[in-house]
Length: 302
Image 1 (cartoon, rainbow, N blue to C red):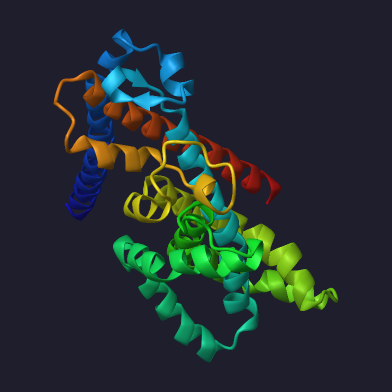
Image 2: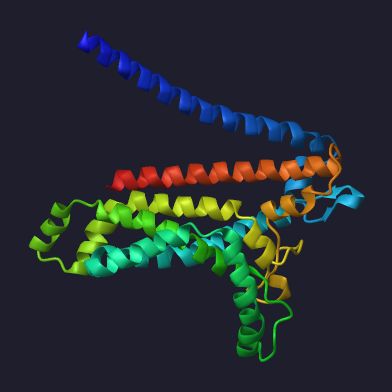
């Protein structure tokens, strides 16, 4: 009887987990189907090539080119990761391998608290502090006069990097702390220095977790909206400089949010905005495939 009850309980748990997993798949499928239903009618009037690679977005003239938004999303995500990954990884290495326990116990809760701060707070601080600094202080320092605007790729990348740092640090730190102590002791026993042990033992062993932390950060950057609206400049051209008016741009998420509230439902414009959502979903899917490939390669190396 006990054995029968145990098997029964196992089946119930297995069935519940399967139900939860299938629910997640169903929700994702419904989202994708809804986006396709709302977005695909656009391509009866605009070719997919013109939509994806077109650089003009003029809804009043029936012209819908999304390339500038796609480029903006890629640049913003890449800029944030270029700043955040080295800083986050360095901080995780310091806390895991160098800092004394009391310092780690003090800093780690503060880092985890930063992860819970709403993005609007980061955006407000950037508008009040970072944008004037870029426009006036950096402008005078770099070119001897103020920039016309302080918004742009530099300001938004720095803001997003600060916003995503807690995620990268926390996940990387957890991964490094999970490296078996015997691995490190064996390295020291062979005469390796602390840095050689970090470089040859800790980092390769923790690499899947480090990559996972970067992926989580990437996911937040790709879908971020309020920060890019307030700090990127919302200009419908491709970013071409690091500072100034030409460093501004607009992302897929910003375009959807800024225009959706006053677009007539059922119009071509309405369908075009949902097509931007399709591109965003496909972009996230491609990034997920790339990240999974990198994870598999890191496991093979280990």
